[in-house]
Length: 258
Image 1 (cartoon, rainbow, N blue to C red):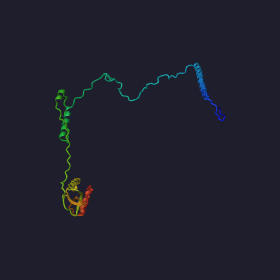
Image 2: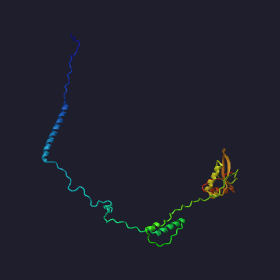
Image 3: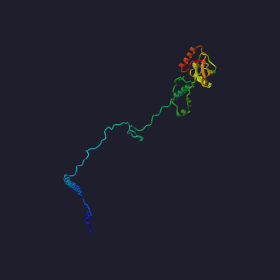
Image 4: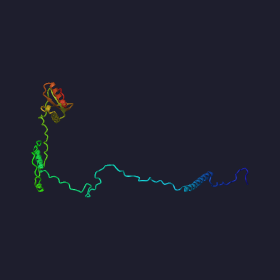
């Protein structure tokens, strides 16, 4: 028995949507079909008209050759470039042997050999030989029997000898040098002082070659130095003049106080 207070709508099954083509698609298909038919009709009409006009024109090249060789091609022109070689015949005539060379002048060769021998024996004093009569040409047997001139050997130059240094006096050790002296260096050993003296003598032999050096040891800040000096000057001005000569030649020196 139904209750009138309950409002229940009756069941209705959903209506399935029919599968079809929408209107927009139909319009696009109609336009496309119309265009296709119009193109086909236009092609048919054009083919009929074109058949009446005849075949299309053909583009042809102009008459005559496209390229012609110039009369003067230019470039490097080599004389005889077109003549055949190694064929036995040339354009100038039949082949011929080279002319026979003149016989050698043996007298001239003998004179040159004697001059070279004199130059080897006394370089710098080469004297020309008197001219001699040229003998008649000799045959091959006489040429083979002639002795060959001696080979010319270059004389090596004499070795250069360096000028000898003046006699060198080895430094001697002394307690003091007096009030007027010139000090050249202060080294840490007697051997270094001797080597420094030899270097200075070789540098200015005209000034120090005849001098007799002295080495005066002294302690500076707890270390012993060997002072290389030249003593025997009569005054301070004489020592200063000698030191000025050394300085003009690039040798360092000074006047010690004691």
